Image (cartoon, rainbow, N blue to C red; front, side, top):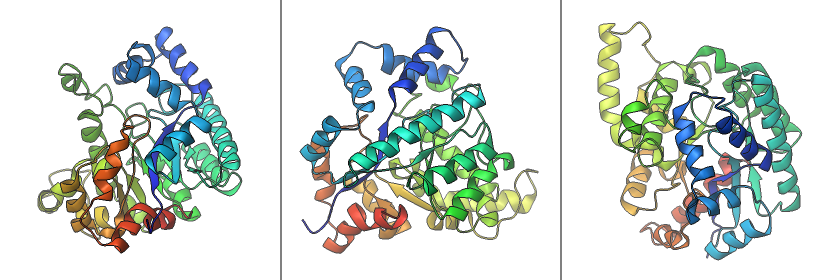
Length: 342
């Protein structure tokens, strides 16, 4: 091959975080039924799939590298699994757990620098402290950006109180990876009662909403150099660019919503110029080719979604994309090297 395969949305979890999740579930320390559905399943269901996922999340050494070798993955960009530390009601505890995760991640990267890079976990519960932890992660630990697992206890980064995180990311020149979470209590019930709250659909709806809230709130007019990375080919939004522009523009012109103010560009322009898209969990050529056609070859990157979707034969789907060798190298390697400063 003329390229290296870099996988850009690959999850890990320290053992201490898994134990904190178990404690939260056992003592009924949260009313977030999405978390209870998602992590309750992964930690308590006795199936082989859940056991394998939980074990692989906590391992960033020989077993993970053997899995990478088996699928031809040269490097993983590791990020803290959803919901990260954002589920915890105690902001100080969440911040301490993020710091612990970042220290462990940095140690794994030091051991295997050719195989791993990573994103800094932050606790948006305290936005100023989160910005400082991002700076520590980048400047002192060598991490390549921030991971935010979508909403934080039902709150979204479109709220200006969270914008110190964006300010820090732009100043540091690093991206924010916006990863899905289960829908918050205010929106989850129709998904939960139909078994559609997780990766099957709820993730996409919740995170697509978050992406649009960030765009329409004017984040990128304030921070024009900020870059956000999203998985699963943009949670369906590339298919909606025309309708988003039409209806958003109509609503702004009519003054329909007090919260919607005029933007400097069309909504889709921000989605094309301030977002990158990865293929995590979407090993299917038609939507990959479509995304490349509407946002450009330089804005779509490969991801596997390890260990949640560790299906070795799926790599062949992207190996067989009907694109040039140069475009394939950009897709697998050089886009990621540029975005994450590898």
